[in-house]
Length: 502
Ligand code: NAI
Ligand code: MG
Image 1 (cartoon, rainbow, N blue to C red):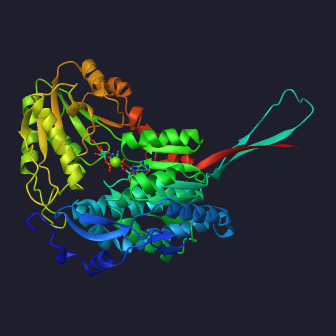
Image 2 (spheres, protein in one colour):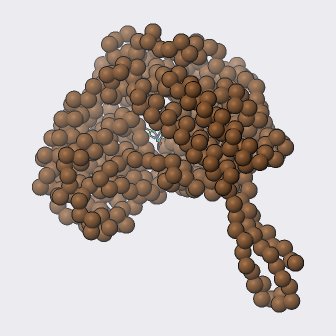
Image 3 (spheres, rainbow, N blue to C red):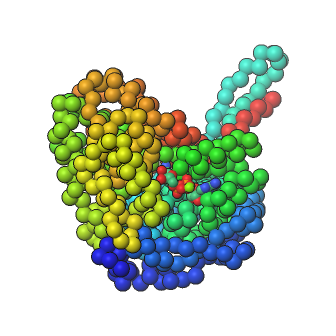
């Protein structure tokens, strides 16, 4: 124990009881252990202490889950449900999550290391909203009628239309940065469109998905529609991706793993959406309102500890205001209150694991070795927790590893620029293309520069704002396809064309 460790006695009774319970997966409506009997450890990253064990699924468990999902997809009690009945089930699920919001926030905070308020907003409240938003889509999925000519059949008349059919069995694999939030991003369009799913949360953060399995049963979602398995990526995850009876893979995680998944999907002609890494630029022009740009740039990187796929990890500042912005962001970094997630005073918790702490530190050390300057932070905090200080680095050049690779931690590089066209080229000069923000009052510059930024989402005078109604996806190595909004419906349905001779 150290003063950076969570005090688990402050947990509510419900969360404490769940943590102490025997954790089982959800397969075909039954609560199951892994066939092998194997389990994997779950930690509280503020203390490094094991807080439980969950099943470690292997290929046979994945097979059972896919068989259950396939059977449910083909069963009348799901396929024949009217859209409004699917909508009602989703609304029930949303209500149940809302009722248990405090418990879910505590579980997520303890397991992922993030602050209670953060977990509440992004894992719980936004998930309730997304379930409700997608519930609305269940009754609004439709095709078009099409007037056709078929000139080579001049004596015939036709009626033609399109329909959108559910794609089938989805394999959903999620990361640890916003664990329940990411799971709900995957589950909601599945339910709205009438697909079925096998979900595997990240091995580091499986608790909220397993607790959510209780709500799925309580809401009365038919057995096998949602199956939740826990396990490592290299075993359970790989078996899901390679399973021949999966129709679509929906993955969020690293570019490295996503690339491999994309290859397997392409070889088997599976539909595939990939939400991968980023190295998103934040560009502050000479005329920007620094009152909002300075905290905005700090929030862009330090929000969720930098464990955020569109984290603003590269800050480009016009040279005339460079010193002022650098100093302002560094001041915020130095004053952030670092501590355990359950402490209400905490502004930044530990990273998700010791492994992630080491990984982030190796990036900071590589920058130092290449001659960069640490302006704030720069160190891991000694002790059993996986803390890294909020870090601001200057005197870097674009080619350094620290400026090119996704760090996924609270590490910002700050660089001056003098020419706006040149800075756009530099902003685009990584393999990623997820987010980008521009800070300026100059409307002409906004419209001139935004189309040149290669990113799936661009912001002006803000960063990291996502909305359920706005598509979210990346270009280049940041991914394929999009989540949220009507796009998620399109990615879970297959268009069918029908032509009737009349
Ligand atoms: P990862 O990509 O290995 O893990 C993400 C998910 O994929 C987990 O559920 C994991 O079990 C699963 N997985 C891993 N290997 C798999 C395989 N061969 N087949 C199928 N599923 C597999 O990410 P990891 O190792 O946890 O983090 C490493 C780095 O990845 C981070 O430092 C960060 O840069 C990046 N990352 C990016 C995320 C994003 O949202 N863009 C989320 C998580 C990680
Ligand atoms: Mg990995």
